[in-house]
Length: 243
Image (cartoon, rainbow, N blue to C red; front, side):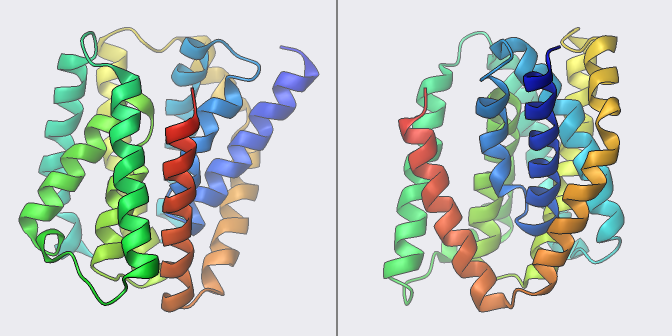
C-alpha cells in the first residue's frame, strides 16, 4: 500500500472510534466511501468489518455495563434475523434501492424531530418497534454497512440519555458484528491479509475511542439528541446523493 492509502485507512480508524464512542456509530456510514477513494469496493467493504469490530471492542470497554439490558434484549433476535435475511438475499437485492430506502427514512424522521418536535412515533416505543428496527439494522449493516441509522432512529424516538444511547448501541453492534464475522468467515469473504491490515491500525483505534468518550461526556441529553437528528439528516442526504 502507498502512503496515501495508509493515511486514509488511519483516518477511517480514528473516525470509527469517535463515531462509536460518541455518536453510536452514526459516522460509520462515511467510512466505506472514504476507503473506496483508494481501495476497490470489495476490499473496502471486507476491511470495514474487522475495523468495526476493533471499534466495538473499545467502545464496549469504555461503556462497560452502562447499557440498558431491558432495552438491549428485544434488539438481539431482530438483529440475528436481519443478518440471516441479508446473507440469503445478498445475490438478488439491489444495494442502491436499499440505500434509497434508508436515506428517505433518515430524512423524514430527522425533519419530523427537528421541525415537528411535539409529534411522537409511538409505534417505535415498544418491543415490536425494537424488533423491526433491529432487523432492518441487521439487513442494512450486512449489505451496505449502514446499520446505524435504524438503531439511531429507534433510540432517538425513545429519548435515551447520551450515556445509555452510546453504551447500548456499542454492545448491540458488537454482538451483531460478531454474527456478521461468523457469516463472513463461513462464506469466505475475509482473508488473513485483511484481518492483519485491520490489526495493524489497532493503536489508532484507541485515539478515536478516547476522543469519542470525551465528546460524549460534555453533551447533555437535549444537545445530544439534537446532534443525532441533524446527523441523521446529513446521513440521509449522503446516502441519497452517494453512488
